[in-house]
Length: 140
Image: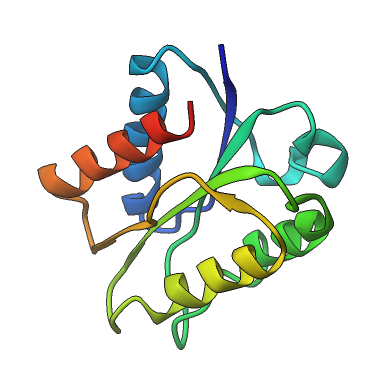
């Protein structure tokens, strides 16, 4: 059974709803999902999981949230080589550039992308929730 961490930041609750759907997908596929607080997810902790789902909305000029999420992510970058991960997040403007950049960054670090990233504009609809569940299943 796969043990999957779901690590996310949400300002409006949209990315949190997506994380709940990711967790549902992990569980439906027979995996164990653990939501891990940003402050608790460190380079030492990443080895406890078979895979990780990272969620962060677009902020500012299409970038990761820079006060909590980005510092956590920068701290674990060195442990991503060979790690199975997936990315998700919501946005309110732009075209998803932040997510494409983030995915390229992860690939450059050697992460193994379990599936395509999932993004949605503002509040996740049923289609976005289903895509997040499929993302969770792909991590198991």
